[in-house]
Length: 101
Image 1 (tube, helix red, strand yellow):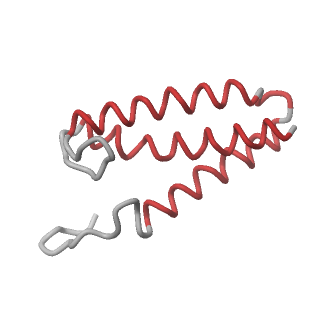
Image 2 (cartoon, one colour):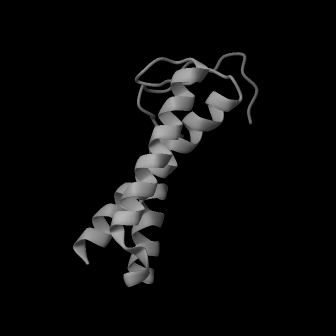
């Protein structure tokens, strides 16, 4: 069951991290990304993250232990969400002039 927890947590982290990159890419808005801050690098990073998350979740064999899978994936999404809501990968940008939302 350790592989389910490990791959479930990793899949949740990857999926949660892929979401903001993918959304910023398809809406053509810049967002900090290792490969560049433009829409195309973010779209590719988000898509790659979703593919890797799907592979991790497939390898995890989620139906074998559904409760442990749910907890592991949920914890991964929560952890990366807290990271993005907090400092983020590149620290907090200066938000002067941006509206809240």
